[in-house]
Length: 276
Length: 269
Image (cartoon, rainbow over all chains, first blue to last red):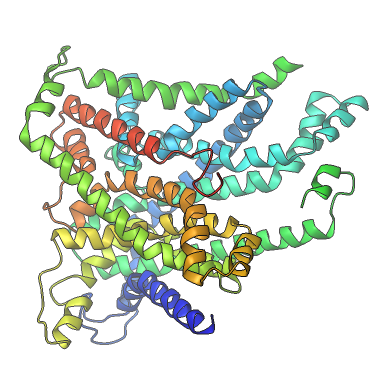
């Protein structure tokens, strides 16, 4: 077992190195004076300076974040309400049908989503640009929000709702005081996922973006097609740091929530207390 | 009261109608339209009689299959070993983290790594093998696609193995099974559900990675995704593009059917 362990760790370290080499490679050459991704001739920060002065890229970066924040917000709202709808549709078949529709966009290849949305916008006569990208991002983020929120609803103690209603709470109060606080972790996870989906998306955006508007992915694609430019490397260093801190933050919030939950176990919830 | 609740979900139902059902219908409808906009079966006919389209679909299928096999061979042991480490959640997060890096940046990195004087060729040169042309070949497409898809296989497989009740493993060991025997008769069958979702998560996207074929494989690899993008955005032949889209959707459903959740696994019987 001990010998085995050593090989296991070695294997994991090799996979780790494989997964991180391209990222390290990008970051390393972002400091290259020579301007290529092959020979390192000397240390420089000029590519970062160029990045900071590239107003076009800055505007695109801000647009990308704007789309991500907005689309995640709207997708989370619609998705959460949808999950509540699915949860309350009592018939099993209806639930399965709704979930089936929900999952179509999750499993569809990006190209199909992009092409069919492009068809949709053209048929309806919607102008391609910021709003078509925003709508598409909302559309493909909704299903993941539903999948994040639904398990929380199913875990919820329904007696709480019955009790609230017995005590005379209105529907709105039940939603605000009981349901929403119970599913908040799911909603936050949904928002986070929707945000990363939006930031990461390339294929769908590429189809529906038209000429005037670009997100970072689309811009990187068109620059990469023209060849190596170390400004992209500098950009990837920045983006990696942002992604890294986001994920690290998310991890610690989750971890804190987990420990806090253990400390305040709900004593009224018999079912949960009994089952391991 | 129920009505009020239903009203809340209206935007969601609207979304299903407008962005799930309607676009698929449009795609289906468009596949029956010729270049002049008339109703025709020409696209479907061309697709099924043209050798170019059929070999392209087959090739696309083979590439996706190879990518899936490669990711599985790398990810399965990694997932298995991960479940045995201390701090497995943290380690998992570390291995999954590269997915949060923009896919185009990762692809772009390989333009440098695989280039004529890039890292891999410097290594090959150092070992006395001499530099090989790597970028813009089929191999490079496989390498980069595998690299990008590994985390999507790793995660479901890890979850499946992690969900296995430890007492099953202990019981097997107590009853005298060797470590290998325990693995092949207990852990492997119980982790197949994760492998199935991993295959789903890797195979279907692999059919449509058009940016990789453009940036890394030159134009040597043409997958269904590349062809669809080409027809929609370059040659503007939306009818043919939609026909291929429908083919892709059919393949997708076939893959999902083959990798569907089974009520009873082999070992639970």
